[in-house]
Image 1 (cartoon, rainbow, N blue to C red):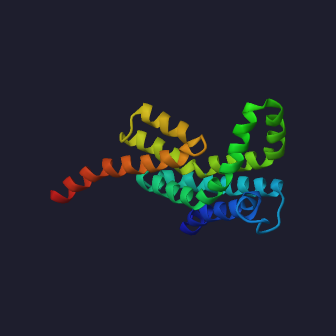
Image 2: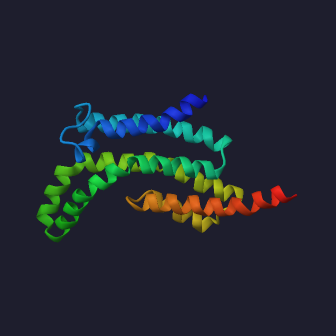
Image 3: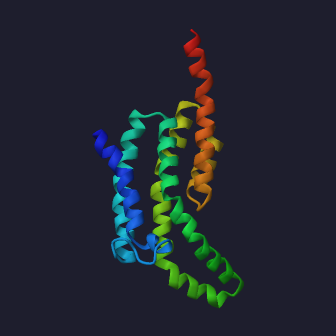
Length: 182
């Protein structure tokens, strides 16, 4: 896979995230005027391109660079997650009154599906980094499981990605210092 294709896959995911239903959380109308179904399909197509990129990068790149790619992607999509907070609060309020919960889920179903698809596709780099770090011996199996689980949950995925970047940076730092001394 060429470098251009590996770089454009995350850019396509960011564009797909901002063209449709998720952009309505921040703007009055979506940028491209697309419906929610088209938005979810665009995210899934961009997610498949990202998956191919992650699988290719996993062979060539270190766990640290995969975690950094994942963190950059999460930070680019962060405004959509922040815009989703009022809807998450609406769902939480619906838990107190179960009849309203059914209405809330029905009203927000495509938005929830799209945001979760976006979460999973943007978490591919972090999951691959955790797996790669475990394979390299930089993370224990329990830490790998914790990071993979956190990458599948809303809002904890960003925390997990930051934490993973810090762990991998600290794990690589002593080995590069000893290599430069010898």
